[in-house]
Length: 356
Ligand code: DP6
Image (cartoon, rainbow, N blue to C red; front, top):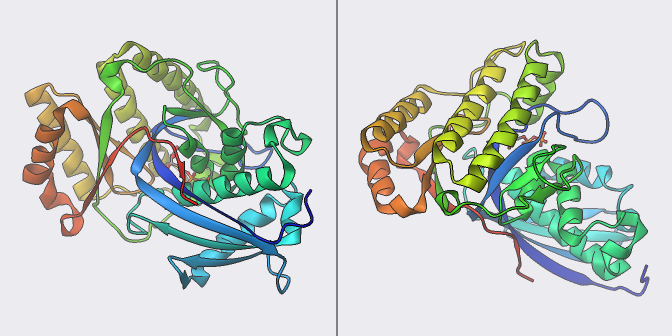
């Protein structure tokens, strides 16, 4: 380790992501390991930008956090807990203070996985700093031969599981599965084969049904799977869906793709509704939008479907080839169901980039 370092400054922009097959439930061994494999598309236009400056330890502080230049004490416990959890993996951290400034290009609390983009961007900065301090990480024993992207993914997983899938342009798979080569519980990998053109240029419109705090956080929701009567069946189903969706993406089988994506969204919410205590995160307008999307697809036969994350908002996914028709549908039909007419648009399939 280079003890002469006085200051290093790096920055990364990292996309959020939307799961197609959902991570829902954690193994009861290890740190933040998924009970089943998941696959996602990164949302290149919904991202966090984070700059970290590393300076010699100041006032015994591990970090100082600002959100777009403003102090934000409510974010500090999560970051403190994250840095505590990776302390063993990154022993060099104890010599320094991290001056972290971050901002999202989408509003906080819109149900977009802001923690995925945020922990992703922070971890990219840390993996880069580590490389500068320790040399090529992939050659260093501390990181067990992981590549830069794998190391970033590994660290971000510890912050928030879904964050580890934000590192790749191609679909990202996290969790052990035979469906793709090199898949691991420790970090995500990108799909190892070409995606058929039918499924390689899709976009996402996030229809904001509710922008308030969720009644049950994802982390609490995952924990309820530990005593869930249907947990084992769900984990098996996710494995099966993952195999099938990878095949559908390779072969351009849009019909199977849509069936798996929508079924996964509804299974996720079914698991919430059958947890003890049970809870419902969908709202009347969530269902109204789903029904409109079904009606529209039935009438037009166009490649369009929905998915949900752990909240009330609806992600409408569609082939970029039908951009104009899809946006007309949003503006003419779906807008009245969105809170204050809000929605967010993103392409899928961009990888993070270095900004400083
Ligand atoms: C429903 O990654 O937010 O979005 O690992 O506890 O931080 P923690 O949970 P989180 O869970 C995301 C769950 C999901 C599905 C998914 O993204 O796969």
